[in-house]
Length: 130
Image (cartoon, rainbow, N blue to C red; front, side, top):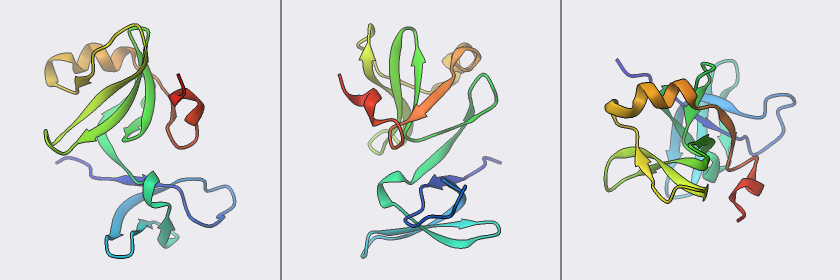
């Protein structure tokens, strides 16, 4: 069974806990999001930072989430979810390649042996500037 997990940055300070991981509760009416984090209960999260674990790990075993950034073939990529395709994809941010790609089974082995998550769009916005 696939592991469904979300992460998000808390609205208020929780000391060393910069991200929370667990189930997500979303109130669309008020645009509020909460992560049900073990040991913390329902933690209010910055709406725009909520990202889902895509079920894959980088070459070091680090979980890959929506919003993560990585280099692939000399091109910086951002993990995004496409609702119209119901799929996660690697969107080109900057670099040599002009192609975006989806996480298909045929390219996963080669991809995951080389990919290292280097940050995310929320903590590293400087990567998004061309």
